[in-house]
Image (cartoon, rainbow, N blue to C red):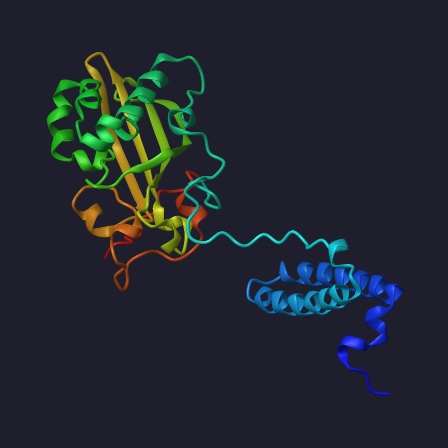
Length: 285
């Protein structure tokens, strides 16, 4: 016997409707579990789930039981970069904020001197934004200041003009060890500084790393009566704007269009770690 869809007996059977609704909910849960397994398959699964829900809702509407249905809570994926949690999904996500990441191993005053030098050279807003190294230079022995000034980009972090860090936009991780050099106590500091920049259009970014730049510096500071004497310095910058780096400033990837051959492949964690040697590859050839 043929039935018009509006007169089909199943759509007037309350028991059938409850069973169909139960099956649909079970199918949706199963499909949502499958959707988590693959980013691309999720798009297809979502469409299938909507077809199943739509068929059942139509039947319930015809039976006058539409109000008994509750839709599953579906959260859409985040579009673009997350500026509310700047380091979300990056290796620096769980690092301490700013100078809280520079922790002296003990109460030796040599560690505190070096700690203050790291803050002045890589975290101080006057250094970052205004490019004024006075505070940092005042901590150094007078004989070495002129040399440091000539190579200031290699000893400090200076943000490219026109860029701005997000609130809580600096994370730091690393370590200090105490030794001796030329008869003086010497502290070797090995740290990675991660900076999250404010993008003008966050939704257009494809990766969180497009707005996060990392600077690693490993340097030994001898503690002399005249002040700190830096030596044995090596460093590396990762996920950066290359032209800005060549000009002596730090900027994120989103400020410059990518060029063929720039960048380094591999695991981000390698470039956010102080375990092992400082990387030597040049990502801005």
